[in-house]
Length: 363
Image (cartoon, rainbow, N blue to C red):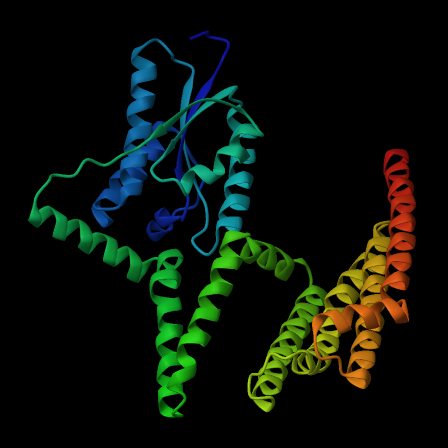
């Protein structure tokens, strides 16, 4: 290794288990990291993060023995509450390390796929020349399997990132079942639980939980608008259920028109607090992107007017099948007006987007 280069071995404690010792990260220097590792080994000898720290120390020793005297070992930690907070904290600590130590290359030591989430953050700041993935060897046997299961169960009970998934959500499902059992509505348990599971999968699958968390942290205005929108959507769901029950869960054309008439306007209006909240935030920040929220609000009002008009016509004429619905829409030229509105708004949006880009390049 060239003497002009300095390499750092960075041990990642993604969920900040090391904070149990009362120490603050980042921890820089072989002696400091070794002391923390020994103290942590005495307090939590079974934690996998301990293997990460000692692996980083071993890599440091190997580099020194091979003639790479210009090296350093570092321990950085994230946050147990959420992945986004952990990434932000590790990024800040890495900035402080790079400013103080002045390394050109790093080797990252991790012990799980979750810890590897920080790799893009590190790669954006410094050249990563290696990633050491620590895999703890386990003896094969029934007794060792029980010990391993006990460790995982303790992690589920003690660490919040695991407990909220393996304990929190099942607890909600059991609570729902118990409540429906007490009020003698057991027949509705399956659809309600299926709906909750579907919502959870959608949120996790599309990363909506991180987006909501990011929005929640933006400002009090955003939090208030998000709460109002959530309450409005929930009320829309209740109204939809009442409408279904009032028609005996029928799915003929007139029943569907009634369901939509009772719920669609409320659903569209429930989005207004969200848009207005973001619009207010951009006004306060004097952002040129304010036009985006104005366009979104305009589109929402147009769709509200369009759907309200369509549902009024259908309610008065009461078609019996889908073919009659299409004939009515064609005769009243409602869809034609909608397309014209959309084309005009798309054209205006394209012009405003070009203006925004030119403004951003100018300033």
